[in-house]
Amino acid sequence: MKRIALYPGTFDPITNGHLDIMHRASSLCDLLIVGVAKNIGKSPFFNIEERKQLIVDALNLKHPNSDRNLGEIEVKTFDSLLINFARSNSVTMIVRGLRAVSDFDYEFQMAGMNARLASDIETVFLTSSETNQFVASRFVKEIALLGGDISTFVPLNVTEAIKKKIN
Picture 1: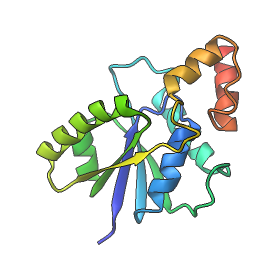
Picture 2: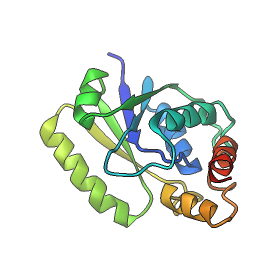
Picture 3: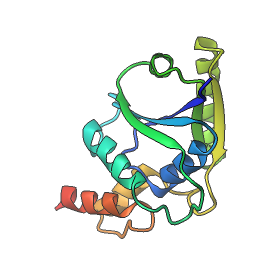
Picture 4: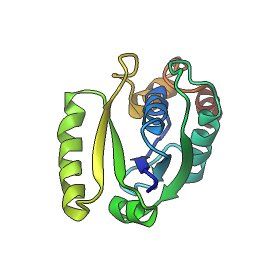
C-alpha cells in the first residue's frame, strides 16, 4: 500500500519553514501532497493558483537547509473539508508543522477533530527547524509591506513575487 501524506495549509506565502517541513515529510512517505487551501476565512495576499505555482517553483529550487532527497511531491488546491480532500486522495497521514507551544494548542484540537471524522487517518507533527521557528507568513507579509528584507524567510521566487505585488 502506498503511503500518501498530506501537508495542508494556505501557504500565503510559502516560507522556508514550509519548505523545510515539505522536504522532511516527503522522506517519510511515498507521496506527499501539498494541499493549498482556498480558506475563505482569510483574505489572501496571493490567489490560490498563484500560491500553488509559487510552491511548485520553490520546490524546484535547492533548499539551503536540507540535504535530504525529496520524495515524490504533488501540489493540489482544495476548497472542501480537509478530511474529504484527504479521503479523495487516499491519504493515510496528515502532516502538520509546529513552530512553538502556541501552535500546539490549535493543532492538537484540529488533530482531535480530524481523528473523530476519520480515525484511519493519522496526524503527524513535525517541529520546525531552529532557523524557522519564528517564521510565519503573516510576519513575512507585514515586513514586506513595510519595506523590510524578507529574503532570509522565503524562497527567492517568493521574494520576487511579493516585490511585484507590492510595487
